Image (cartoon, rainbow over all chains, first blue to last red):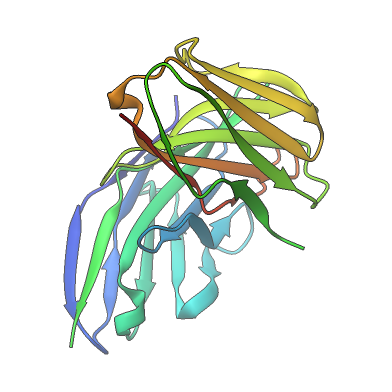
Length: 115
Length: 114
């Protein structure tokens, strides 16, 4: 069965510093991986996705992630964060069953940016 | 149009009330989802509709009743809820199931059961 583990519940960083949010997945089949962001009192917005092909994926707002099959990881990175990046970040995997598929979310990482 | 629209944005209901949450998308997506999200927790899947048919029910109590009247609309009927059902209810849609396409989420309905 597919699952997702986000290793850090909170990550505080200073403005303009780089950041990495960690995500590991477990799957016995091909995976589709996603990073979503949720700002306070809002829905989820897709940052980026990995379906196949190049292992380095670029997304919106300057974020990127690297798919590492050997380490079963899909860590999210940004070289320089801004105050507006303060939000909850969810790593997710699509679990595909015989008749349906569903998105399974990790527990989330709260990114807080200090001025 | 890449929006999923949910109404109402906020809802307060008593434990004996009947209410409905509505979700609409005009992206031609054939899969639609209901998620429940408690504070400081990830979204938890409740239901999946694929081509207007219920394909996944994650053992949700019967006081929650989904309905998909057509390919653009998804409702969640609520009856005899409990205070612990208070949460943010998120609707999402995707092109279809099984292809790895991303889900687009609405802004959610914040439900409070009193």
